[in-house]
Length: 502
Image 1: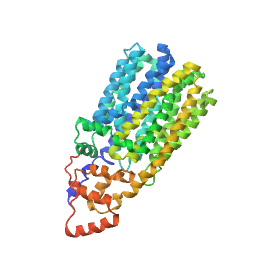
Image 2: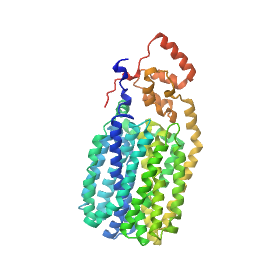
Image 3: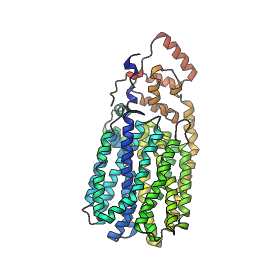
Image 4: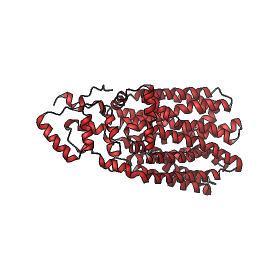
């Protein structure tokens, strides 16, 4: 066997090995920073209320726009990833965050702050966050669960830091100085983006599509995913639980202050959420797997139901700071797992070929819920002068989200039937030395990816007709035919595809 035949196939270059781990490190650190910005919104909301003395609903709108645009920009992020790549999308997002926070240093009006902090910086966090998740989906296959768990654990660390660090900045430099510091911190995103160079799979997917701008929009907003009933139920669930999540993100700190805690103690509650979140993000990532891992839908149902119960009973023991801390840790533990499951749910229910459209849809649904939650909670507080009803509402919506996950299982059989129809290529030696190449590029057949998607993924290959035979014939008959082929001619290896490596 020559060195040419032992060289890793282009499709697998930078996937599950080599630079993929450097990309994971960049995604982890970027998640730390992005989560810090997002979860600092609750602490900044208290400072905005004190500085501008507007009503709670309008003030909360600024923070909710910032936090929800992280999700609402999902389709735009998918479009940018499809037309460029994850690295460039991350660079654009980092630039928007830098400009938005830095400009907020000069702002003296809440209306203008809604534009600089809420819209500009918030949109940047969305581009960064989506590019991270898509990058993980493209760079990892066998170790995807571990990679996602490690990367999103960075979000837990960001949560851990956001409360006390932001409160320290506000106490030391004031609101404007804190914005300037955040602007300087965001410039580190340029470094992380440079490390996220395209892998072989990313290059192949882009060349395979040969996209014009119109093609990219169709790929990013792939309407065929709407026919996936299970995935649509997950999207509805996503809207509901993100209403609740945004309510807690923005209003928990101020709720603690109204219950007698100091602003510094309220800020530490975000840290407590981060403590619980870190552990479960890692545990959830480790529990996922293609063969022996736990079902991501089952995990999502459990996390949503338990988060709802904890949130609904929280007002009963919120009068003491110890009770607030217990709630923050427990809620952080359960909610951290839900965020970890975004990419695994997309891959599991939609397939790797629709990962960009699926992540974009998940983020869009999250943003719709996120932008509705805080102003709704603020309006309830302005009407009844108490946050108790907002937490009852938040808990009920978490449970409603769990109900939609339960409903989604009605159509789960359709995906399982597809799994039974598909051949696990990793178990077959039909393609000899090319089997691992197919295992890497088509590993999600066992996750419910359709034969048409598999054919599109292999359309650059002269063996696409053979792949159709693999998908449509029984394992035993294919092995028999292949044995006859081997006797008459050598099998052309797939790893000679002319796809440049990174």
